[in-house]
Amino acid sequence: MLGLFGFPGLRDTPAEHAVHKKRREIERDRRFAAAVPWDPKLKWNQEWNIKADTYEVRNLFPDVKPTDHAHIDYVKSDDEKVLSPEGTFVYCVKRLKAGEKLATLYSNQQGTVMFDGPVLVPCLHEKHGYHENRWSKSPWMSLTPMEFVTLRAGIRFAKKHTVVAGLGLGHQLIEVSLKKTVKQITLVEKSQELVDWLLPRIREFMGNVPMDVVVDDARKVVPKMTADVAIIDIFRGYGGNTFSDCPNIPRVWCWGSAEIYSSDGYW
Image (tube, rainbow, N blue to C red; front, side, top):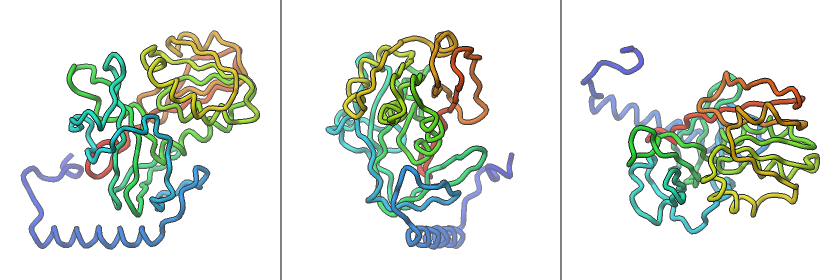
């Protein structure tokens, strides 16, 4: 345990702090020089270095003011967040500073991504289950490179009649709706509040594929459905996720939301 957290009470000396700072600066400059334009199809690498001015994401609330706070509980200004109608969810756009690291995952591999300038990251947080006035520190969903790369496989599988379980910020639903191979979508989302609040804004980015919406627990209803593909995105943690048998759906693909952090807080 001490190997992970260090001895309690010890601090770097000024000389040690200067050495660590210099190392970070050298790494940052090296990675900035290696930055490449962002592309959602970019091959995953344990060290992703991205040009910030090429990283554009869909903002569901364009009028919301970006916040510099990594932790949602410190976002106090009303113009820096949007509450869902019943106050269960909160939407904000976090500004990630140049040189900050975000975690990335791909299969069982771990890595980091660094941008050579500031970028904006839309985030959705849910009310903490044990504290009525606090939000879960890790997002329900956030539009980071990790989010995009870990959803790519499921989007590739989508065809004909596809079930999308889990709404989030709608990235997967939007991408599935834009595929020519997809002819029908069934969205399954447990929260009626989330559907009423975000789906109208998400639809503005979607293709013209017919879509049914089922508000229920995916674990209960999807196994009873008939479709060609089911893409399940309802899990709290990344990796090792399973789902019930779906006898009338030939291909079922699972993904789990993962805790994403920068060096100054959770993302």
